[in-house]
Length: 533
Image 1: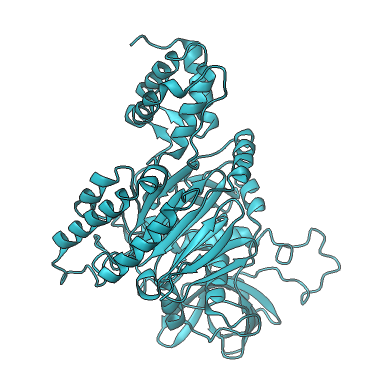
Image 2: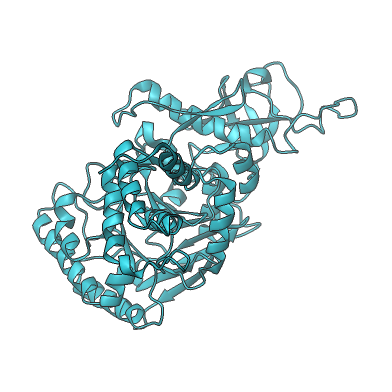
């Protein structure tokens, strides 16, 4: 293979960079060789290659030879379909990119320079004591820098008229000593002593009394960051009058301040490419995602119901672009007492056969598998890695392009950011509540849950004793900037709720209630469905 010319190299690198990809040397040679096949339609061929790469479940935005070669092999089979006179022939399948949680970039906030910088180097799964402290510090810093831009909490430039009482400026806990009157403080709720709750920030801790506090919507649990208004009593306890979560920031405002940093993990999209993808996204009216949670493979009744769902979608005019199957994949926990892994492997194989028997689904739909809280894996800590290879090998023989990914995981559809998380979060949040949630705005527990995770910018703000998190990978559970859609797979009742422009829904438990959901990314509409009987 002749080495590509300098001009070709520059052209390829520029085009790939526009789509958020970086090419290794061997990948560049592979792309150049593909382009050479079409001397009269080089640009069309290159656009087609990039469109197909966009749909691949890539592990990284840095492409090696294997990634490019895999897509080239698919395109060469359809070589005759490329006509030099027509624009690039693009597949009807959606431009979908799946991001594994363990590949999400980590950022630290520098409060002096007021900028985020990316963490470089390896992240240890087994952290040290300092990593646990960093987990809390990083969560706090993300919310503090967001709060500092809120007009109600930022200090006025000219403070001549404002009185002490009218200012909502945040006071550090260390500065409370000797202060009288009403003060606003922001901190993490923690239980440093038995039955005594404290509010901690980066400067210190103060015992708090929440008994008469007026609260906003949400679940106030240990570990959540709150903004509290009250005063320091002579006994050293901060009497809280009103408290709530840090205010939300509009997604566009967050994104514009991050100056092109890739918090989501799907690759940075330049503005001109974002415009192109955005127009394609609006036209993708036929694209639909079907989400099922609790797909028990060892339960014959569940498998019969799944066959009915697959048959239904196999017969529609345009089949769904993506099926998301979330765990648990077994009706009983895969713990140390579980001894049927061989049987479960066989059942995954049966599922593969079931999908392969529906030729239209096998050909035109993608299948994404997200493990549940009781599925096989190295630990119960979040994020959970993808299902073990041993279990899924039989299924992959039937569905080679099935995607197995972590819990939580992220999906980028054109420009839209979607987060999938399978955890029985609602029950645990309600169990861990320090104060009964207010019923003033809503009495719906799901709405309280959505308010909590969006304002905390975190999928699971529970105490680490209730839900362990791998310290160095806590950033994978962040919801900053806020994604467009959050899918919370939970065994509780199916629900959908749009909160401050964010679409949140729970597809329900398919095994228990025969419920599932269909999502149209083009309009962000959620269709809650159930099988009758």
